[in-house]
Picture 1 (tube, rainbow, N blue to C red):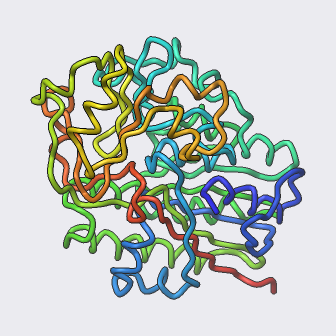
Picture 2 (picture 1 turned 45 degrees about the vertical axis):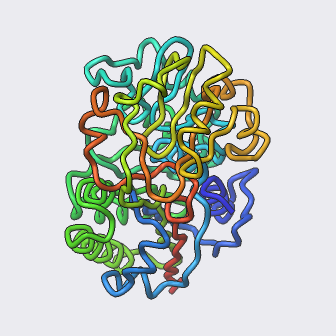
Length: 365
């Protein structure tokens, strides 16, 4: 069971053609899907006392998919496809001659370089979104998310087809989500980012993170209390998170540079676009049991990306490095801010892949 199945399962109850309820979720005419960035299933279970509302709901988890990264998971939410199908294969990845930062839709490492004209979002991710399918079937489909995301490349790529309502904080996120499902046959996707930000800075499970979790729990409870009759509030996430262990620095290990034309991804999962075949053996020997180091073909055959289309295959590195344990592969010079964070995600551990799927049902009157 994966994150790609969540929205189709919910839309099946709204009579959207081709939407199958593979997750067996309750049917309702009004649905709010609240995605809390960084709320891993294992983290929620470990700190249940800080989230009494969420922890009161039946405990169920699904798989975020690989890489366990925000843009990839949001693309799966928006399309109902896995990463190998929709082609948003991570945080940064090669698209032709460019290395795309999929969160900001800029050239990786150059936040001022907008790529929306050269890497058109609707071309990079050309599959119809579930919002487009829902709207075509007469469902009122909407998104409530931070104001800055309204016209972002990622929103255009994976959330197009929904009416966008910008939120500046908890209050208008909650009220906007509830208002979006007042009418019959309505679906709202709501997104909250701050738990992930706090986790990256202070670490998951830190005092700051726990207090933010309490705020998130209150947010979900207040949405649930305001939902209309015959409705569902479903809470999920895009990935979990781990606290960094050893930091292996690509930028200060010349051995790792040899034969690597481009390195992309993020500290828990790296894509190596290579010039020589020796890269695989060098990286395997250097990292040992700290990482799974596979060729693209072996990673695809192992099912890491789900079915892989011609659209996506060249975006995956020639070599895929998935960190195990809690170690991270940083770039102190090229990615100084990212390298200095405390919490990370992206790889294949259960702490990163397992996400909650929590359902609060409001009966009809």
